Length: 147
Image (cartoon, rainbow, N blue to C red; front, side, top):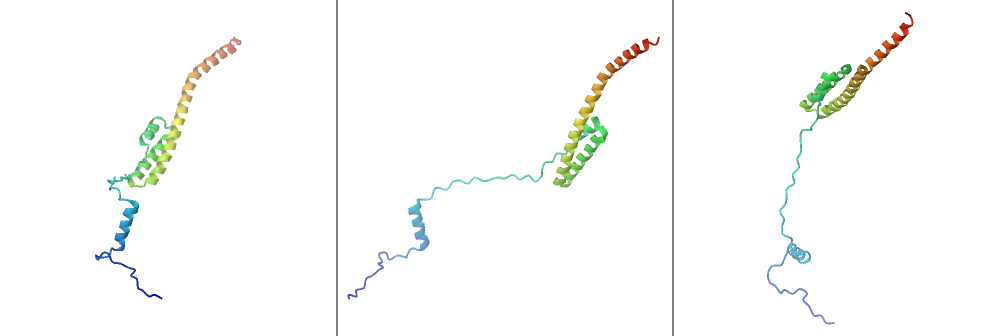
């Protein structure tokens, strides 16, 4: 048996030993390549509106109150629109949205009912004289027989 000693570690370089991090970086550069040049970073801007837009329909309600106030429905829409505006001013956005949606529905109903009523009145004023004229002529024919 030959017992000769062999050196497993040869020191070709007498400088300080490289640490692990340096070896890992050199390995990454060799495998992955040089890092790309740094691109300018564009900022991301997010606009957050703190106040939500809630329509209160005051002008529409005022129009319905003045011109189409059938069964006081126009007045009720005006009251709800003012409540919506007041809730919005105090910061109650959910309450303001609830009153605004009710106001919108009431305004639509008031407008449709008002248009139907005005149309019915116009039709009555057009048809009424014709009906009255026909009734008068029939009455004349009926009462001519009594003379």
